[in-house]
Image (cartoon, rainbow, N blue to C red):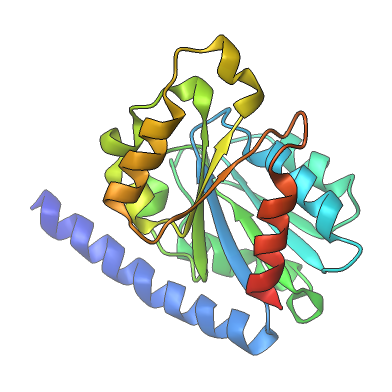
Length: 214
């Protein structure tokens, strides 16, 4: 019974996601679903990405959290359109939540919309939102075992951002294992090693994003 209920929920979500996708296509906006564990650095990465893009690319953001609006306030300070979604306990955003806030964003004026999902390496990977691409952020402070522990996340993602590499000398973490395991799960995944603190690797990531939306 649980399997049947889960299947029904995912099927219903997928239908709404297809509707969202049509809305995005009509507006001509590229949509990226950014996912990670809590504390991996999604919001900081997003701040750094927007800072590098916003003079050339029109960016909008949907912030997803269980509660609070701190991340949305950080993004708002950068002068780009942002909407906060609080799930009230749900561990992920779903297509209906996204659909309900689309009227609050100037979609026709945007080149890219980034959805920062709720911090979680499990549920967000399974729920389509209407995005063109999923991206997973993994901090090296989480260890090198995460791709094999949470395979669906890495299988579903177009790109993996290995963050906080400035801490590599201080941690017993095998970054090459992260890369190897991610590729074993998804041979087409694109991998970036970045530090949002030092800026290392961010230009390559931003340039890649620009090629996708050009």
